Image 1 (cartoon, rainbow, N blue to C red):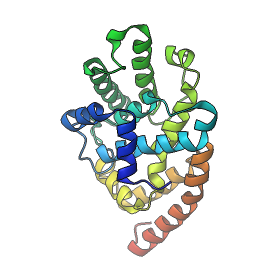
Image 2: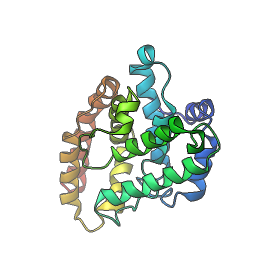
Image 3: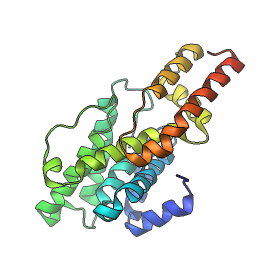
Length: 232
């Protein structure tokens, strides 16, 4: 699953997400974070689109717009480690998405009635499903109103975790260290990172195919890096 800027732009254009991206550029205080920044949100949105297209579009049709909006906002105003409890980060993301949906003048505005209000609720519920550690999704309006909601939950969570299998994994390791584990010694942090990666279980077939086969290589390379630098 190669991620190219031009292809991302094509998706944003296809789904008329220019206003959404502008809102993120103007209001997302976390956009420059080394890991949970705006680049990560773009990556998760595009990966969500790729997973849906490869694994579900033939049977279920085009990727739902609410999935892409949730992906773009899932780490909005992330604290970058200031809040240890991820509930605070998720609440900030939900608040940002809600403000955008209220201000936006397209099909997503609640002023258009019950259907649009359920759309908004679905976006917010999808964002809530990304809280770490991941938990089962309880019954909700979104789960009952949108037949593909649980598929979107699996896709969004997989897309979020697939960040760990990109070609620049070392940069991500350093980014997470600087955000969330500044005071943790490198040997302890490296061991925790490897254990985290070993515990990833993708839910969707495309993620298992493209992300799963990369995990062992990534873990082996991190062990080599730890041995080289005497940090493992």
